[in-house]
Length: 181
Image (cartoon, rainbow, N blue to C red; front, top):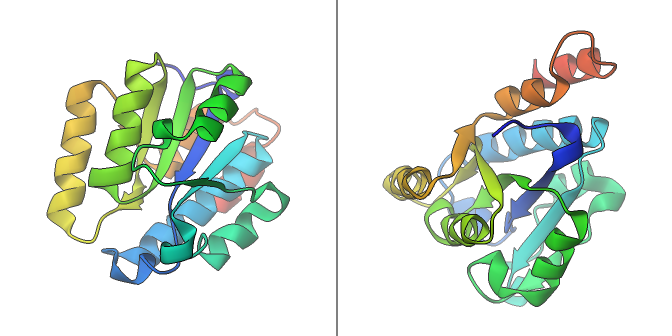
């Protein structure tokens, strides 16, 4: 898989206010997601956001909402996998792009099940390891291993953003470089 701006979108899964306080290393996950969002926005990569049962788990974290700005248009879902939500499936297919950058919580539940279903439907998910987490570190570790075993790819927000810019000659390189510092 080769990430290119023209063949990639991003998906932020369920980084919600009522669940977030219980997530391992939650402040680091938020900081990493904000950097990734800023970089993706600079590169004009489309970003889809989902929220699992927001009546119970709250809306997406306010700092994530702020980073997304006008792009914050969450898709509400009740299934753990985003693929179980018709609105999500319609939206993701409408882009016609095979590569999906994945962030969110919880790694071993909603993230893993979504990645599994994306793979089964001929998408190429790349999990951003420093932008995902679970309540327990072992669950994150096991979730990542399962996704890798299923055929997903993994990277960090820095590696993803640098792969998308390709070289220091990219028009947005300096902006991306400043974001990841």
